[in-house]
Image (cartoon, rainbow, N blue to C red; front, side, top):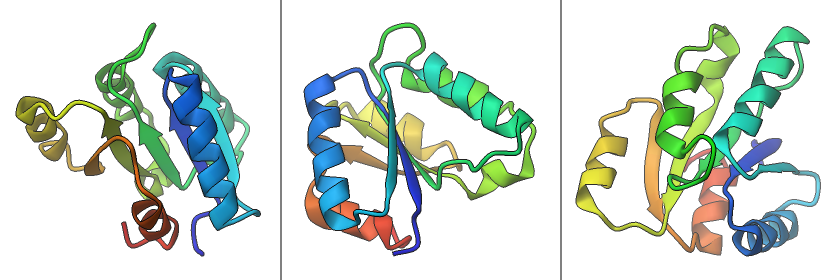
Length: 132
């Protein structure tokens, strides 16, 4: 599989736990980091940029979170200046089936896809293969 690391940015601990288990069952070499809000994830990404660390290949981004929600995270993420960020694939992952949120996500070129929770194993396999 081509994906080496994934960030799960979601405040639902049970969902994050389940996603970690599924991802690790698909690829036990995969690095999975989770953040309960967008600000913590941005702080980590900024640290990696400054230290020339390895950025995530994929971000699974929830919309509704405390501190910094998914939309705010995206707005700040897109302002970051590092060429390597172009390679990061962002998936909006939400339990919302609100068509306005789906349309908003589709209007952002950096968002690969809007996926409604719960994310199923076949979709995760597709993402890990880099074809998602």
